[in-house]
Image 1 (cartoon, rainbow, N blue to C red):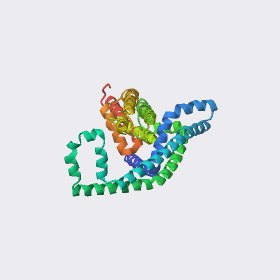
Image 2: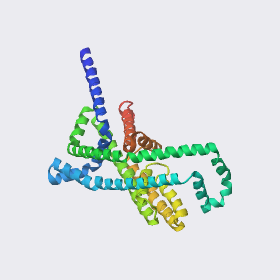
Image 3: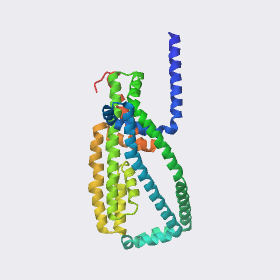
Image 4: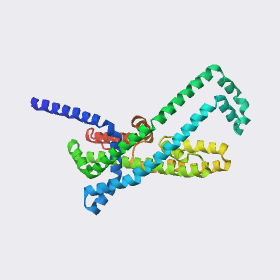
Length: 355
């Protein structure tokens, strides 16, 4: 009996060690693989439908992967190239402006704005403070750091784009095999987990519903907001509208302001530099259309799949973003919703309490 226990502990330890080594080996590819897992969960019903039509699991996986490549990867790649191009243009203009203008020139230009000019007398102590030698030295050093930072980022563009091409290949490869063999892999994992079948299905169902809720509730609404933002920015004539729409997409995930953190400052900019009427239009467009997605549509969709308190969802989403990057939008909520499900199972199975 003692020998069997020693063998069991040794075997489990060996399994854990090699599992950690396997995960460590996959670390360079973990982000595209996780994206493949997320998208395969969402697309799997489509794959099953195509499989019934073509009567081949491999052919169906190939067809769906090809469609994802043509209608998702290619458009996103084109948008990424255009955004990078606009980002380079904006950065070059910022660098040129900072080289050609001192902070005094910037203060003078700001003071010419009508709203600022009316109250400029109240800003005189601030101006005097900024003109001190020690403050000027700090500002000069800060500008030099900003210039170096922007220059370094521009130099990394080619490397980042090359890495993304490789990540795209890894994503498509993992996505294809997850579609083709995902059900078999899931069944094998279920057999290895020593849990009651009902509890295991509850945990798997939680992961599935959370993934769908985040895709449709967060990513889906953010994409709509970015599109609405691009339309609004283009109508009022804001430069680099595509770049600002992408910024709107990412800002949409960051509470409490969300997409309004982008369209509202742009509306203020439009008021002073383009037209008050166009600024009014952009403000109404942002309030009635863009931010409506944040206030009504997103909470309604997410509530259908994520049954945890809002404050927990807030920290799960932001914590996931900060710790894991963009894929953390899924990992954070999945971790917490699964943890809540495990708490309920523990309460029912171990403590013998009804939940």
